[in-house]
Length: 159
Image (cartoon, rainbow, N blue to C red; front, side):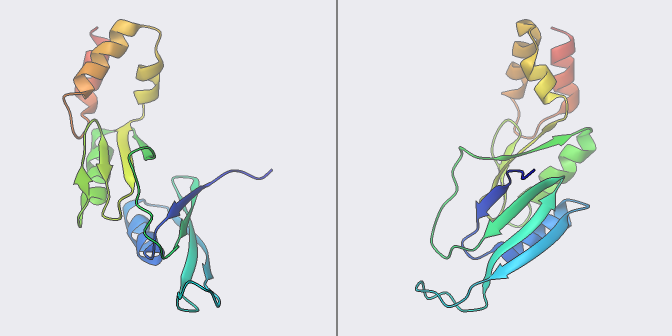
């Protein structure tokens, strides 16, 4: 059965993005590359067109479209973390070299890709039927840029 996967328009940085994400996410598998042939866009023949990789089990295709297609806040990649150490690691790596923290566990990496670095239990906390627990955790999260698992868990557990 075929599975859907993510395509990220990278303008002309696909090969650089592969190297960067491979350095950030241990166990990343680099797949096939495709290359531009003759084209009406003026892109050099033989330049990288697409690069495939698998990050944390998710297949991603990076596409060098050679046109300015900016990212926006409506799409992000979520990285669930079991420990604060993992959150700190991904936060540091993905904001390196020009990335920027945003709010509530969100950041933008140096390529403009948006990420949510969050506790693995976040979905459980966020979907509980106990609205007091959910609201307490959410209100604590609103105070944060990089998320703090202990504070979020305490807010959830103590509500």
